[in-house]
Length: 353
Image (cartoon, rainbow, N blue to C red; front, side, top):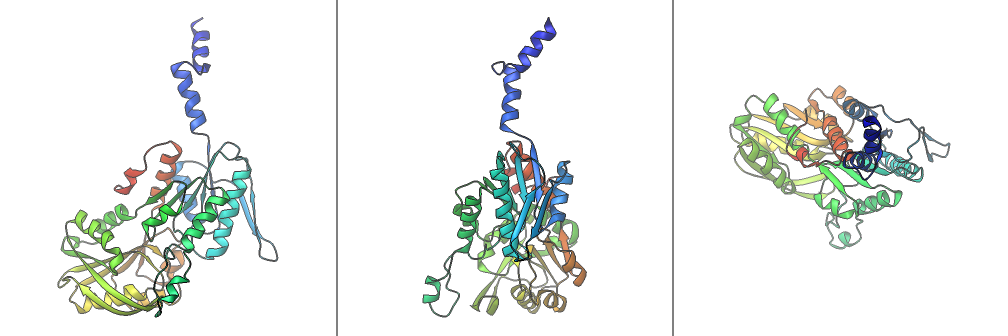
C-alpha cells in the first residue's frame, strides 16, 4: 500500500516531490549540442566536458555554393546549442549558423542558443570617422546590429559569446546575451607562465582597451599603461604615443583581438624603445589575417598568447611565438549553467576546473 501511495505522490503534479520533478523536466528539457563547420575542435571539447555526444548534422554546398544543412536527429522539445565561431570564411559560416538555427527552430526545438565564441562583424558597431572626411561616417553601416537582427529573425533565443569588441553590442539584441570574459583565463596564464609577473606592467595598445587593462592590472596589483594611436585608415596606424613608464619592466600587451597585427607589432617596438625588458601580447581573438604571422615572427615578442575562440593550429605551426589558452571549459560551463537555469556570472571572475 505504501509503495502505491509513493508512486501516486511521485506522479502527482500537485504533490511537492512529484510536482518538483515534473517542473524540472518541463523547465529543463534534454540538451543537444551541434557544431557548425567553423570550429569543430572547440565543439568537441565542449561536449567532452559536458559528457555528452555531439549532435549529428550534415553541412554541404550545392554547385552554385548555396549552403545546405541537414540536422541528423530529432530536436523536438530539446534545448539546442549550436557552436559556430566568426572565423575563416566568415560570410559562409554566418549563413550556415543562421540556417542551422532556423532548421532547429522549425523542427520544434524548445530553445535554440547560438554559441558564437568570436562574434562576426563586431568591429562595425558604430558610425565611425575612419576616413579623412566626416561625410564618410554618415554613410558607414552598423553591421553588428544587422547581424544581431539576422540571428533573432532566424530564431535564436539566446546568445553566448566571448569578449565582444564593444559591450554595447549586447544592447543590439532583444534576446538574452551572455558575454563571457577571457580575463580569468588570462590572469591564470600570466601567473603560471611569466615568472617576473610581479614586476610587469599591463599595456593597452589603444585607448579603447583602457578599462580591460585596468581591471587586469588591479587584480594582479601592478601598474598599467596605454598607447594612444591615430589611424589614417582601417588596418593602418599613423602614429603612437606611450602614456606610462615601462622602463625595466615586463610589458604585457592585452587586447580583445588582433587581425593584421600592425598595431601590436608597432606597440611592441614602442615598448622596447621605452625600456621594457620583455614584451608579451595576450589577445582573446587571434584572427591573424594577411601579413600577421610574418609580422609576429619579425617582432620582439617573447610570446603572443591567444585563446581558441578561433582555430589556432595552423598559426601555431607557422609561428613558434603563438601560444594558445583553451577556453572550451568556460563555454561548456556556460552551456551547463544555462541549461540548468543557474547563474553564469561566476565565470566572469573564475576559471572552472
